[in-house]
View 1 (spheres, rainbow, N blue to C red):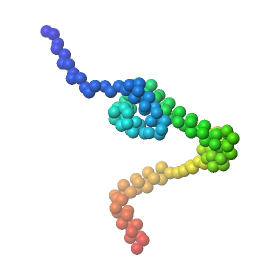
View 2 (view 1 turned 180 degrees about the vertical axis):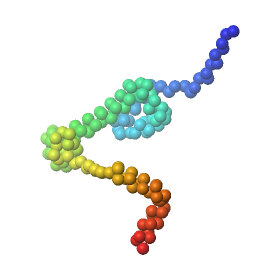
View 3 (view 1 turned 135 degrees about the horizontal axis):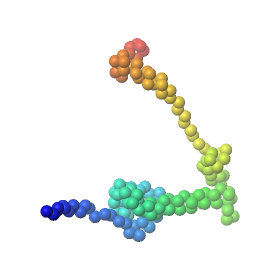
View 4 (view 1 turned 60 degrees about the vertical axis):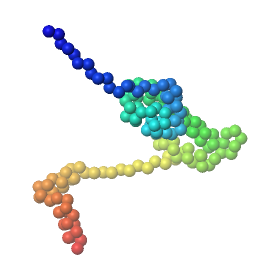
Amino acid sequence: MSETKKRKKPGPKKIMFTEEQLQEAQRLAGLGFSEEAICQACLGCSPDTLLRRKKEYPEIAEYIRRGKMKSIEEVSNALYRSAVGLHGKEPSVSAQIFFLKNKGKQAGNDWADIQQVETNINLKDALTHASARIINGETIEQETLNLKDAKD
């Protein structure tokens, strides 16, 4: 007796991108478009589809990365030229300040404009307090009422 195999129905056609679409995606990425906007503007797919294709074909992700990096490089170069005053122009103090503040501490830059938030939580105390509330059968509503009564 021979076994018969059921053929699966083919799913939707796999979306592939043309070279022209990828070049346009690279250009749009360089202009600061989000990947969602790139999908709508030139790729004709959902962001989820783009994510899957980038995993399957790393060169797709490379197009978008190159677009972003090219624009960052161009703007950084323009900022630097403005800060140091190349091509016979006066240096821009605003560009100098912006440049120094955004270079970052990792470059050993004392001018870096970094905000850091530190939070210390004693997990043992939090768990002990929560455990005591559970053992005593208190609820959040009871605690809120107890706090209101204490204020009055």
